[in-house]
Length: 362
Image (tube, rainbow, N blue to C red; front, side, top):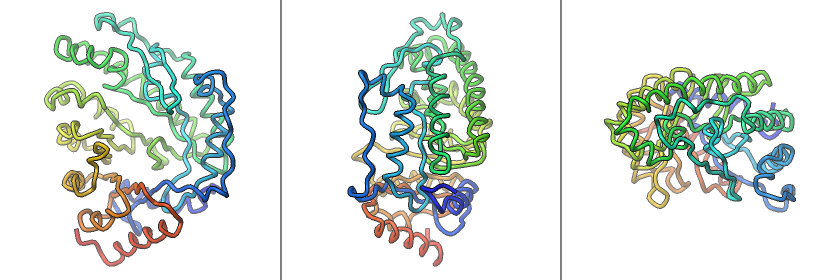
């Protein structure tokens, strides 16, 4: 049992049903909800000399995440997950890309392949200090969170996103035209390195008795991860199929549970190819902020469900009735962004239970 999530087992059964496009009693629903301010524990204050020092302070990061999670309520199927984070380009850093840390919860990297003909000089460094740091962070989170919260995997941006970090987005775009065979060659090497890396952290988490989770806080006892290629917004649908689709398929094949992170309307040109992947469980479509109403994109969510895939829908509380009228509850994961109290959360849960008890009409 997790002290921050006493009903963990019931929520896990609901998520297990979601992965199978089945229904336990209602759709999976998660939402951020903090306790009243007067109940908060004060967060640790950084006294570090630099932003990088703060990022790399294992004890500080473990304690900060523990306190932050303790200040929240985990109602519905919301999971208390802390995942070791060094920014989205950390996987490329394992090949040698320098990382630069910011105060805004992220980092950025510098490309190191100035000429794709030199790609053979780029190798995954299994002794890389950032890899060692993520291992230390994972162990610290496991120790601090034992019996309290779930330790997730870090944010691995592999495949096309790793190549874009190594080469630079514009350099990679040029290479796709001039040297597609070399791009495929690097992709294949990255695939093999990632599968080995994933296995290392999967084994570490499972030996600790943990489910697998990550920055999207679903859970699974099997190999679960978010599949992505944010770089794909820069290329055509035929080029995506020709160069990157095989790599995505391979990733879905070695995973047991997977959602594809489809980032922005510009990536929708690749949706047909993505939905053809037999091994892919579902899709998380993220519209552009400010143009992200549920009704605006309801047809996309229905298209995903009609392809027999799970779907994650980020929405507001006021849009729940539209969701109920439009989608099926089976294989549906709702992330509701504006829940402000425990009473409102319980009303939402009861509404979703009532939808499924009376039978859905979509």
